[in-house]
Length: 165
Image (cartoon, rainbow, N blue to C red; front, top):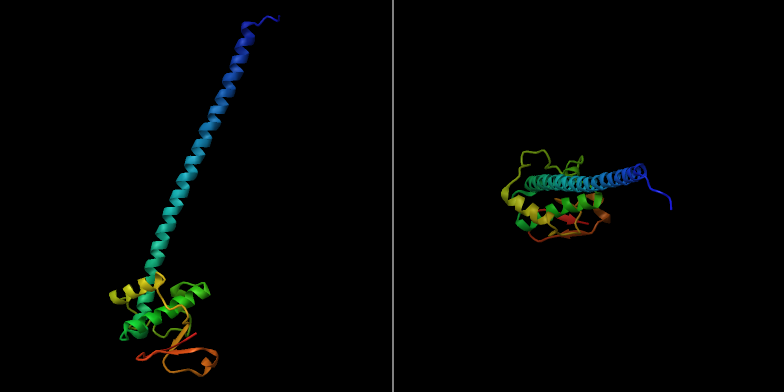
């Protein structure tokens, strides 16, 4: 039998304690990293939600304003169709509402005197943006332009505008 000296026991105990200390620090670090990742994830989710709320408010504002500018005195059904055209073009083209309506020579009501957000049109815009819209229409005009030969025309009785897809 090999005698165990106090020095060997102290050395072994020191190594075990050192190993336990390193393991403890590693575990504390892992828990801290997990907590930090969770905090960062939650903060990113809150920021994303705020951005979405801001984007949605901007879309309602611009959609309401362009509906007013293009057909402020039209029926509710016609306003919904105008709004549907704008949303469909935004969704199909991967753009924002503002991106669509501010394209050159597309919506004559943009930046005009009637480009005003109203309560009635905001409610229409919110409903349309929630998904309750006519999904086929991509164009509207008064009269039928020469270039519309390849389009399917949708003329609604009592509407000022003609719609097409």
